[in-house]
Length: 453
Image 1 (tube, rainbow, N blue to C red):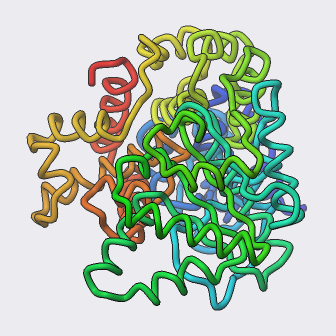
Image 2: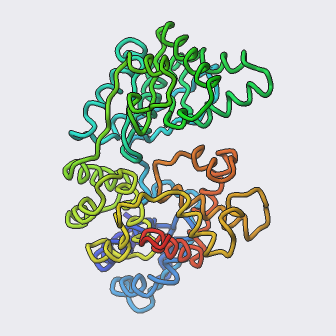
Image 3: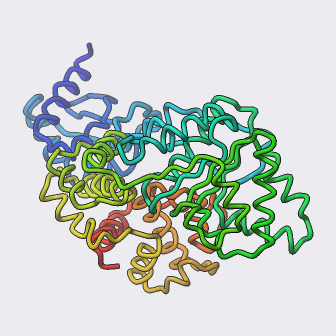
């Protein structure tokens, strides 16, 4: 071992022992040995943000530990290592992204993209959802043969959409030749209206009736629609069912309670299996939080887990969002997560059991940047407004992690979902070097989660 590498390893061990866990995990653990000469230790870091943080916050400690080893002449220099490929990152990719490789489907009709993070292995099972998950797994393993149609209902935020995506991901992974189509009822309705306006019913039939697995989310919005729409839905379901194709639907209520649903459509739905996703019990909520923390690569003490689980009782989205917020605050502020930290940054958690919605986030961003919510959602493109819009998209994605990019795109004037991906990546990258922007994000997150909006 060279003298320089030996100095580096001794110095690294000393720094780790003297640093706080958040500072080490977020910044200092990412260093690599580059060179050592004339008492100058040159270390590599993977990005400008780590270099900025080391130079502005940690350099005195780092040089002090080096001088304990090599003498008073010791100093630290930092360089961006462009070839760095072994970063120890707190931004851990969700386990399901490594477990599932979604094969391309061709030629498949285009619907909303399936979220590869939403798989059966990432779905936390408890007494409230065990039946729904088992039915969904059966539908995925034997499409069109066991439970068809499968109807999953329950309140918002309890995992219905997760199960739809899990079915689609499972089928695409195991049968790449099968065509899977996931859409929201709103998309289904828009396609129907477009086909009527353009007199292209044939293309609508080809789009929906040629698939092997049809997944439709939130069909409660189908209720007030006209007779023609219900007629089309009925014949679509009839065609798919008769051909042994799988249909899976979700709603916030049972078809038995949809008074304005066409009778023969209701009858078709009642021929299949209807399962409810209930509110998770305390043990399930704790398991959800622990699983989310593990996937995000963040250590959450048990008392913090119990604090969150006891405050949020009826929304898995809010449970998971709380872990995302704690991770973000801990990394940006380089503070350790403990109960006081959680209370400070999650003060509004579960208040009046209000479910956080994209509109709350958009309102907060609009006020912070001096625009109206309509402008944030609108098409106008001037630099300050576009920046605010990108921040809003980023926060919706971060604070509502189960919202897919296409769903977020619809919240912002029915944009293309690729523009949301670009905006989220842009803000995430800028936060690494722009401390003022990072502080804006922290402040906005605090305001939103403390129930100000």
